[in-house]
Length: 85
Image 1 (cartoon, rainbow, N blue to C red):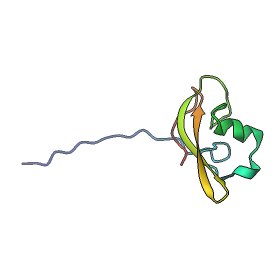
Image 2: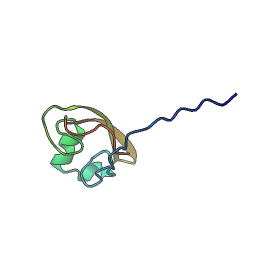
Image 3: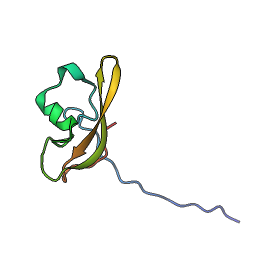
């Protein structure tokens, strides 16, 4: 009897945009820009900063007073929800 094998192809995921994606940045809560605040509060896309067609995209974390604070972030319709870690 031969063992059953199944090949599962996982689509390639885009690499994180570490220059703009707030989910991939290490942010200091005391030094946030207004654009970063908008992205953290879900008012703008976490990846590109767009403001239309936003949908949930996980969490971003900010270091404040020695602890991490999580924010539910959003992405626009043109950006994938994955790709940042």
